[in-house]
Each structure stands twice: as C-alpha cells, then as structure tokens.
Length: 141
Image (cartoon, rainbow, N blue to C red; front, side, top):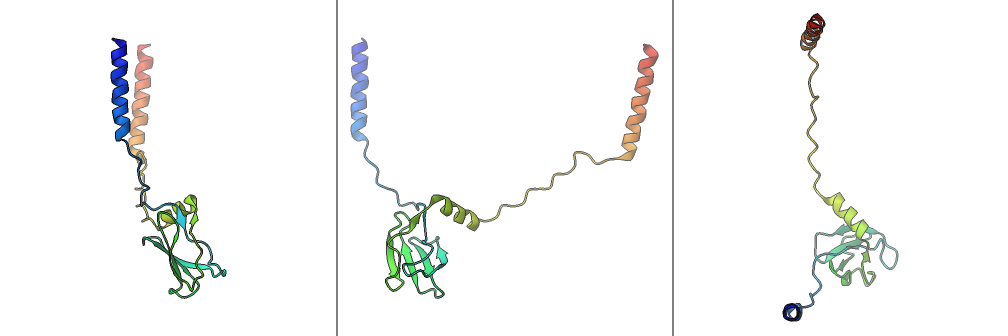
C-alpha cells in the first residue's frame, strides 16, 4: 500500500517537473541610474527615467544625451559624440531614492482634534456630583 502511494507521488512529481520551464528575464526596469559624468567628465545635468530606454543628459545642451536600457543598463544610443559611458550604474538604493523624490506627495494627515474640549461648566458639574457621591457614601458607612 505504501509503495503504491509513494510511486504515485513520484510519478506525479516527474510529470510536473517536465512541464516547468525556465523563465526569461523580465523587461521590467531594474536598478539602473545614470553615471554622474560622461567619458570626458562632463557632468550629468538632467535625466528622464520615464522613457524606456531612459535618457541621461550631459553638459548644458539637451542634444548631448545617452540612452540606456531600463532592464539591462547597456548603452542603447549615443547622442553625445561617442562620449557616453558603456553602461549605466546599477544602484538600487539610489534608484529608489530618485523614484521616491519624483512620486506625488501624500496628502497631509488630518489634524487630530483634542479628545474633548475643556468645558468649565461640565467640569464644575462633575466636581459637584463627585462631592455629592462622597457625602452619600460617607452617610451609609
């Protein structure tokens, strides 16, 4: 009985094992960011991470830019006179910080009202009731 159960389970696993295929890498953006400067040390002046491939602009003129693959970081297009770095830099913490700065701001938290407003008349009434309760309690003791 146990042998037939084990062989049935093993047979099922073998069938399932043959149907699982390796997955291709996804095209979702990775943690790639623009290099801080191009190959002749012109500084990074602007970026466009919304595009795919994303664009890094070097120097003062927007026409000098480099496009990098969002999924692999490899240089896709060099519009910087051949001065683009060969690849973007993989830096997940910096990429998350960039995306957080670009995110829409959250609405401010609603102000929290005081638990109760101080009402002098109510406080006076409570004091009188407390004193009456004490007198009654002392009267029956």
